[in-house]
Image (cartoon, rainbow, N blue to C red; front, side, top):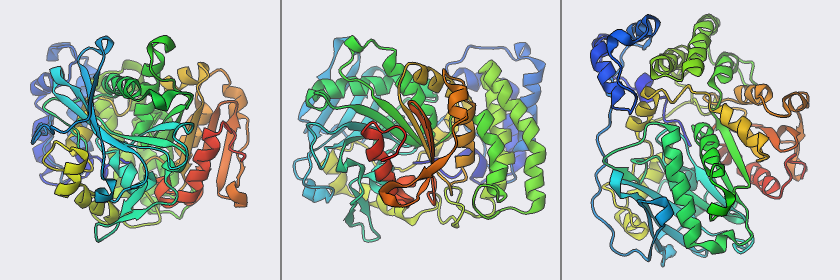
Length: 522
């Protein structure tokens, strides 16, 4: 999934705006803090005046009642090293990475797809004390020939086990913490890996951390390399794909580029395509489409008043100027102000209405707007579940707000990750963008717009293609446009988590794409 609601920096209320002002105006300590993110040291006197002014302006852009800004999270301590692993896999070429795991021998205890083979475990990076949790499910059909998918949720800072138990995995969790089989699971015709990344998400843990998408890419590549070295039977002719949603619109282009940067001869696997659902990838284009979506021009009734819509329009030019500065400099000094100003001006007005940012038709209940997410969290915190999968943490946490904030304060949020998509397409890698049309936070209007604007070898040809009816199973369910190996799909009545809202149609989309039907005609 999943941006957590919205971003801890902008929506959690605890202290006064004046309190925040005191934190932000201490410019020297800001420089100090930014250094800790691994950026070059810069004396305050050397920071350009226009950038200094941006940071001085930050307190006035924050909504009232915001918490003190903290730049770092407390480490998520492990409780034990599980001693019942079936395998340990390492490689001299990868250095300090170690994959350890186990076959889940009694899946009936978990109640999750007990008839398919399952593995769980950790990727360890001992020098940095980073430990990434994974859970693998074989295909229900024919794992010897069916493709393999790596699924990634977003946030940044939300567990990919949300995808497993809330969206597209073999089972969901009901209010009695009982498992309910999902007939539309993506492992019907594919084997699926769910990876908790970055560290300190879900069952993953570390005393250090990651605060940028690019840094996370090397860890994911190492995981895949070791996984397929351990299990070559899943790369004996099967295709491999990466899929995800939300902030995975940042992750996936970078992770795919990291994979392709390694010669095929050095890899234990090949990448066949990527799929991004309701992603945030090109903020400069996408932020222009929050006002239309909130104000009734995206296929759903307006959520905001005329005055609120006007205010969003009035603040948009400055927002876009700030994002453009971030694109130009790639500097924390411009990218952080862009994130804070634009999110406050373009997202917070909608969130304050109490409407679900992931589905404009619904009200938001609880921190993440869906009761089912609490059921999932309660289930994954059951001692017998944690023991069965080898979890080495005190507790499962669906979304880690510290990570979310750290990515924002490292300047990662507003960077132009769509540039990686250009390179992927030009290398011939198929790319699918799909978007539920009732999502606000990463809405279909913005995703459609950035796909049209994306510079690549066939920009003009792709942009000139009309949206056409998409009718899987003979039922009109959306609109699609395609040119060669680039496709955009609008899915009717889907929210931010399309497989949750439209499980049958999302599975039809997946099966068509995996078959090589990039126009989604089947």
